[in-house]
Image 1 (cartoon, rainbow, N blue to C red):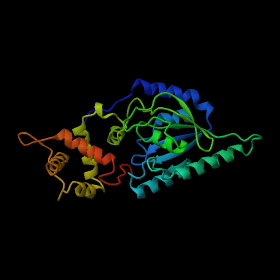
Image 2 (image 1 turned 30 degrees about the vertical axis):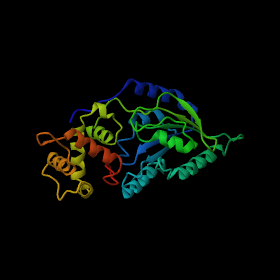
Image 3 (image 1 turned 180 degrees about the vertical axis):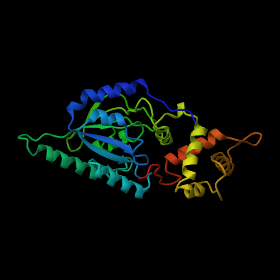
Image 4 (image 1 turned 90 degrees about the vertical axis):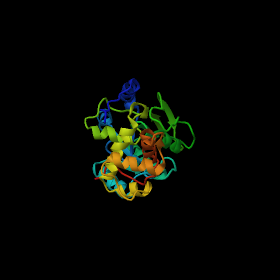
Length: 278
């Protein structure tokens, strides 16, 4: 598997944007992928935000293992963060997020002579569903969304339905991954552009992870396999044969097989899977 080291120029600009505008906000919503709650958190965000009030929004809970999500909620709360679990596509959990924000707003205004609406910044690595969550919070399609990383550009202030103000920022990654597993997890979940990845090898790595963990039965069931192969490559070839992904000369279509496995994992078709568990 190739070393993942991806830091486009607009990521550097986003870091500067956050630094410049942080003083304008009262609190920061950090959107993370509930399937990889640690890998989808950016250590640069910790460095930039410092002691600002932080809300962790565990997004894509419909794709994650429910038991694991509850464990992560407890973990983050015990670490001193405010936490909300949401599904930005369906809107599940968004009312609870609003209640949490309104409580923070009330607490901040207790000692103020003039009531002021909460000002928020929302941050997150690419493709964690940040723009979809923003659309849910403002009640209209204002933020530009996409299912590929790097869609959102620039800076925009948005007014929420409860008159709070939200500063959107593009997704941000860090210059290098100290742990290559972090890079792999981000790639599995689509936070790194597929165009720079070797799709068949990335799918092999995903098969390796799923085959060795508690989700191997989901892999078997999804692809109607009686048993896993002796290696991730053999399992991949069994999947290809089950799906009929065969080229002329009876050759395996590794590209199509790999893309199918990744797409079905990302869509939750294989099952509700959390790659990082406590």
